[in-house]
Image (cartoon, rainbow, N blue to C red; front, side, top):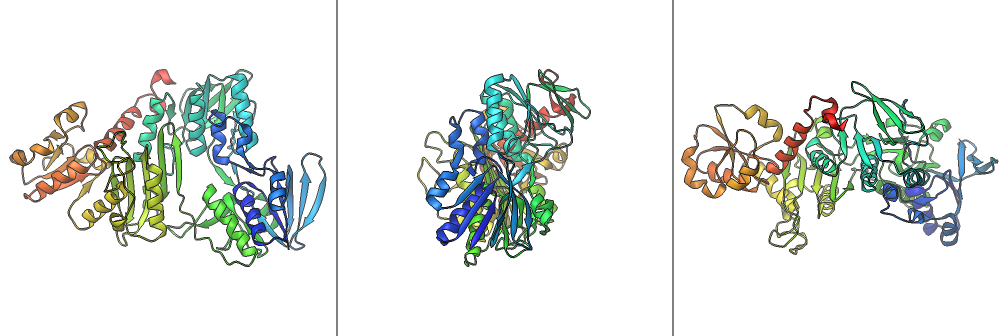
Length: 565
């Protein structure tokens, strides 16, 4: 059997190695148009920042390694330009010599990946970049080392944009991030993103939201950026990181079926519309694990699994891909942000009847030094109690909790089942009631009627109403350092003695720092005849959202102060 793989990196390289493990006699050839067969896409921004110091560390495998260990022929700087499905052959161009030749296959695997979105205003140059390949990151690193830019503009607030902004900032570059939407990192909602905004501003990175860039023009000394409704900007360098699209040109040209975003259609065995052609990675359309709808999810984890599954099926093992749920994690300075499944915007768009839980627990036992607060948001289906998605922002232990929730989703657990998970505990790592358990307790309390919730977006409509009491149950000291407008302060430990200060005929909306004390207060008051609502997320969430909102309400364009333009 002769197998040709077009493209390496996560999907193609994994497929090649798995094929060899399953079939020692198969003839396997990989054609990769770049100079690198298997490299760490996710590590590219960290080479720019100097966290990864050795260029060679980005390369996970070389053609020589593949030949020696797996007996797989890898031809880098070889681009496949045509696929003849009828005669089962490909046309290949040697990019170094210009030579053209054909090669035949019995089975073909497409792993072309995705390419950066390049809008009409984008013009690659010495100071204007995209970041997708090792060659891209070497070019940016060399520019930063040699030209020592003082300022940089990153267009796009996704994974690559934010990681590159961080790494440029750590080099001493003054960075501005321009985002077309209203918040950074579209995998999470605005409430979780508000913590990212605070962290970036704290580190001196300027943020510009709801900005539509119309032109990027490079000259010998820098780059001019034009955008609708605001003064022109200028920087020493620009990174365009507004997303990626499937690299499906070859598949389309060959007549293979395409789907959403022109991604390659595959079945659960990773077969395309031609049964002898498989496709994996960022170029394919797969089922979303939560919704069952077709989706394009460009992440390394799914690509690796799909490569393995394609190889299995070629070798007669009927493996199936069960869909992607988009589990991801990102480090932003000392902060970690992670998500899995759907965010609230997506849940609303899919018309789920849903509930959300927001809590702000410590990463480990409070009595053990060094515990840090995280904010967790979990969405679940009110009809089935199935978990629809989760997002977490914080410091220590964020990745651990998102992985537990992602696993619970795969196992089909209900949100209330989180309460009973038997999770590892020791004071330096967790609490006896882990944050994941706490989320389950909250869901159970909501569904059994022990607690009712209200949210940040509800507060404006509550202010000034005669039929409500807005209550802050933190200590006087905490209240004095900052509180939500209109909330009176009665500390939790004084509540039983001061109940007569509140009217039982009014609804009581209660806030504390994390949501725990306000929950305890609501239970006390509810059992004494009050109608109570607990604020989801606590003042920690309120303070982050409110600060973000105030910062963005400036009279200057994009919510930036005048001296920051």
